[in-house]
Length: 228
Image 1 (tube, one colour):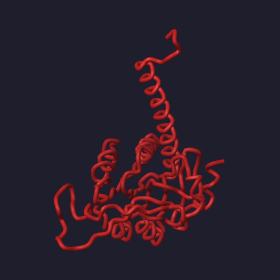
Image 2: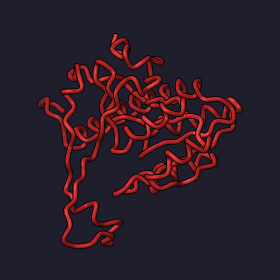
Image 3: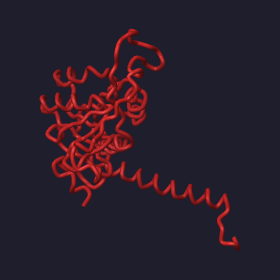
Image 4: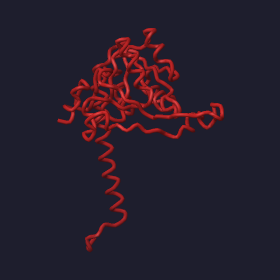
């Protein structure tokens, strides 16, 4: 344009182009993260996952399949939103991987019975000293996995939060307790009771065997190296 201004259509195309570039960058991080995780997976593994680990999990499954590694997945329902049942399970199924849905209180039994060989989740935040924050329930699964010598690996995507040096920088969100009284719009709890809904918990680095990022695989105690 002669006046040096940008038309609405040109601005819209610019925004779309920037969004496409950002999406491609995010997808590349997820792909490399998934491929790095697949290197830790062995033929015959039975892997427990909690909540929805995102596209890195799908790339892990595809990379494992390409390497002719035959694995199975156990997927928690993840109340009260049921992300595991609605998102993770269906996405895993779509890769052609065998997936079994379990309720949130079953993983300990599966581990004790020898039905799980590895545990893999994503994270909501990783501190520079190796603490992992993830969907509520992850901490108890990590502890039980540690008790049974089951490796627990975390999708770290782009790495730790450079602004969170220690676990004290993780703020646990407490959501509306009314949400746990219902499941998909139907009340399942008695009336006249209290509720508590912390939405995340924190896993100490001693319960994490490795954090897998797009740049490589790191022990949690050295996760700062992922930023270098």
